[in-house]
Image (cartoon, rainbow, N blue to C red):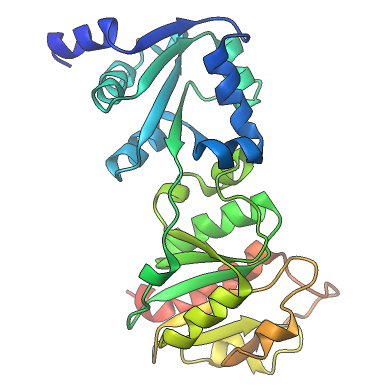
Length: 280
């Protein structure tokens, strides 16, 4: 880092904070509540690498927070300079403050407050070889975060949240994504909006259903773009959506369990649907 960059960090938009009652810290802590995230359009993400990856991918950082004890660690000073250059506020805080922000006893030493980004559903136009994941009323943040991470790993093009879904920008969800929240587009829509989009999208809609008549391994996922439609954790797919599917798939099971965890089932479906694109 150059002397000029060091000067910017020292005299730029950098504040040292040790008090939990500081108004800026209160605002960041308030992002743990959904209505505050919705009102501000912001969310918190933890980890130095994740913050760097997010900035590399073009996400707008509003505040960078790092522990005072981490100031001399590799990359933290240059990251602070980069955040200042991007117009962000940079906070140097005590570990007590960082623990309160992240709600962890052993927090990551760096975290960032970013502007939320949602993809416009109309901009998602399935192309040959692409796979999309649509989730109907997913409620568990851990499930959603794991699905986002899995979709990113499998090369899915986007995730579509249908109906009343859990917040993809909650701290629990973003933790479970392990950074994939910044890598895969997420759109949200109503059931009616989703079905209208499906009418215009030239894609095969494959739903999973306990009474599905097709073994998921026998479907031709390479013939057309594919939208995998996964149901709510407790209720599964409602008939209104199941009836609109081109294929209703089932995952054969041999044990006593009557169903799979939503994130696990989505992973199984995704990697089968992406097999043609992942084979080496």
